[in-house]
Amino acid sequence: MALQDKYKPLVDTAKASGVSNLQVREQDAVLYIDGVAPSGSVKDQLWDIYGRIDPNFLSGDVVMNINVASAVAGAKVKVTTDSSNLNIRKGPGTDQPLAGKAAHGEVVTLISKANDQWWLVRTDAGVEGYGYAQYLTPVE
Amino acid sequence: MKRKLRGLLQVSVYVAIASLWLFSCKPKITDQDIEAKIQSNSALSHLSATVKDGVVTLTGECKDEMEKSSCEAAVKSIAGVKQVVNNLTVAPPPAPVEIAADDPLTKGVTDALKDFPGVMATVKDGVITVTGETTSADWKKIKMSLDGLRPKKVDPSGLKIK
Figure 1 (cartoon, each protein chain N blue to C red):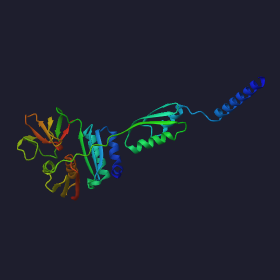
Figure 2: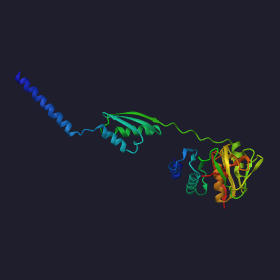
Figure 3: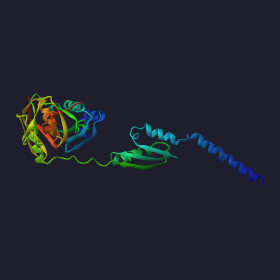
Figure 4: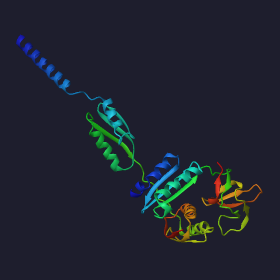
């Protein structure tokens, strides 16, 4: 229970901000926090609180997997790379050949999710393929 | 005959006085009083309780057997409670955390680190051990991706933050 106490502000905020399917489990000295945030800003807020309790996430005692509810099939998602274009691949993996690129800042359509990491998207130019979800942010 | 009647009358007067004394000195605790006591106890307020003639029936979900018996004991200790019917249920233990196998984890780690050439990672028994050097902002992005792969643990003790 010690970890639940250490990360209590994080778990309390997750509960208070409407994270659904929230699961908080402590196993082998690691606290696993899973859930679906109602928006990207709630997810960001949770990561900020986590970073305040454990600066630079260096303790290795939490695995936090928070998805965003608005990232559903048909939604518009924006390419949020640092500055470069996003590779759109023919399959879900960096070992897969390129199908094309989506520009930094471009808004594309989320068709489906292969998994939490790879989302099938279509650009307005008609390129269809898998983009890395970390660089795709639902437009809210 | 007359004396017998007088004796009987005397006895009944005594009984009446005695019972009056008994009831007047002992304030009667109503079911509502018991209910209020239960509701004002924060350890019990998440449960539902019905009270009838001093018999309390508890329903609701406890997180474990210990809570189930401590709630019963707390209700029993309330004045006026004659009996507790403990219909509390215990929540099933949470499902164990699913940990991804090393093969998909390794593939996921490769994808996650592709854009961060200064950072390396190995995977063994679900544990991702991260080494190398990166910025605080980039490490946050990496950590967010790695945590999404369902690892057992992300161990960054060998990582240097610039």
